[in-house]
Length: 149
Length: 68
Image 1 (tube, rainbow over the protein chains, first blue to last red):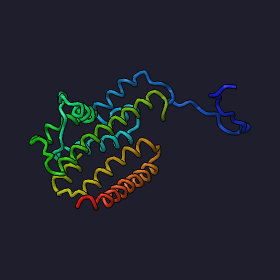
Image 2 (image 1 turned 135 degrees about the vertical axis):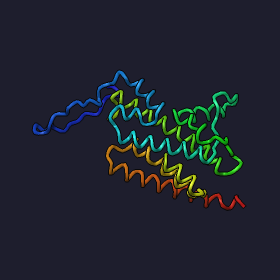
Image 3 (image 1 turned 90 degrees about the vertical axis):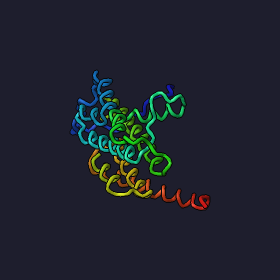
Image 4 (image 1 turned 45 degrees about the vertical axis):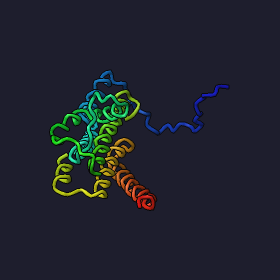
């Protein structure tokens, strides 16, 4: 008796039912790592390259909206070399938003101001933008490797 | 992105307004990740947005006594 035995489907096959057709989405894509890097650099670009323009637009608007709002609220943007474990985690979250990380210089030229609640909220907006983009990168990897449609 | 720029610069965002904006911008990608059709995206976004707001207001009410 095998423990990991797959469940048996006892229902008889319907001869009139169409046979399942393998789709292009189920084929592993050799370019998956490159598409994932593109998805990280520009939020939504990975989905766009895979032909999922709706999801591409959703991720671009969401990551861009969160990051830009965070900068305009004057949230804290963590630098690469903070010398503090929490600062490093903050940088990983912020840097995950790809090109939007560098937009901080444009939209937050006056620097962060976390003495107000708005600045504190902004810090969370910026980190959330990176986390959402990480989810997008994993989604792109799954689609490109054929595990998701 | 442009909308965020206009919202933050033109209107003074309140705490609640910030919550609404955050809930909307996070609900959208969650819907993109979990749903496959446009009608389901909209339904899931609205559902997630509502849960964000209701739970946040609920937690705020629970924390109200210790804020004073």
